[in-house]
Length: 359
Ligand code: KG4
Ligand code: ZN
Image 1: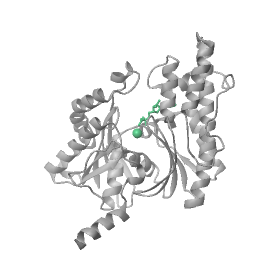
Image 2: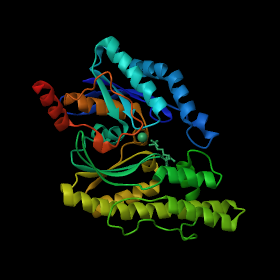
Image 3: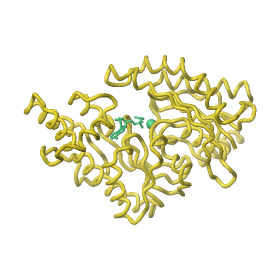
Image 4: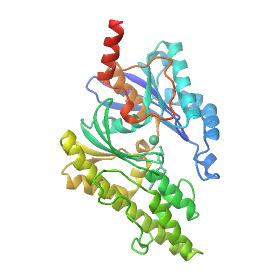
């Protein structure tokens, strides 16, 4: 089956066409991403209203390009998938409404996709990873440890009680006068810094619940920076290195606990899977490798362009759901908030169907 996927939940306008064969193997036919990062950079973060307008202006062309590069026409598609949340509501409305229009005109099924589910299932497109696996999702908006047991069968093991990890990187960069998005800049400066110079906290260390907290770390960093201001280039590098080292140690500790929890509840995972922009960080990857090694399982990290927001992951989640007969009605409402655990899977769909037949 061939599915078009549309992603507009944050600051990337993206569309892609993905094919899924009868054995469940996936192939990306096209994957077009237009980043709005330059439009938001002067504000030091994503401005929702600017993002929504930029999606409206760009989306038609991005879809046209994705379809052309895949050599597809709407009438040959098996379905259309769009991210229906969670995310900035203006952007979500743009993508979901566009998908609805295409499905209505062409008589195709619609799949309203949870953006987090799309991140969670990407590894099945890129590596054919079997269920159950342990997902570590770390982006600008999310930090989650999830047991992925099946399509629509997700169990949240741990999450952040305040900032997301990517957000902490972005705030650190902003504080130190580095550019946006902050993650890549902090990583670059950390490479020439001393990770042991500043004694920063490791929040939540040793706690029995695999949750994260990043805001105390951010505050500690600000106090250190203020106490030695004005900052030299080397000070900035040392602060970046010390911050990144703290984050890496926090991830190590929290994931170890998460992995223990996973085993107790779901048995041995087939893999530790990383997703989200933070997985692009080499120091983070190294510690994930370590956690996987300690657990005797492999680490799967999709290629960088599929770790960050893209249309292929939406199309793929759409194809996985379509293969199970999980489609959505045209009045499906866009959602700013939509926890992964509230995503309906085959079991819930069967109950709905049985109820409908009884009525
Ligand atoms: O998944 P993503 O592209 O977008 C969403 O937030 O959904 O993730 C972007 C986040 C940003 O906070 C960015 O600073 C962070 O991922 N990031 C990194 C790196 N590259 C991107 N964080 C640390 N190190 C990096 N190399
Ligand atoms: Zn994302």
